[in-house]
Image (cartoon, rainbow, N blue to C red; front, side, top):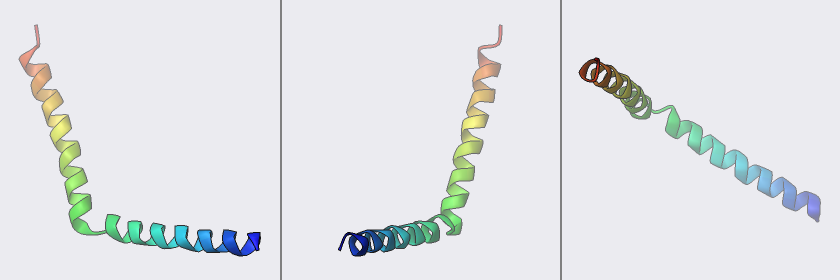
Amino acid sequence: MLFLQKQKSCAKIQLVLKGFKQFILKGNVVDLAVGVVIGVAFGAVVTALIFQK
């Protein structure tokens, strides 16, 4: 009985991970993440230039 419950929960986890992988691999999510990283880096450069003594 315990083995069947463990097997079912492993199947549920695999299903969730499969859906998450499909979501992440969509182009829009990756583009958004790259845009955020570039924006943060650009903000740090601008801040450094403004507050340079």
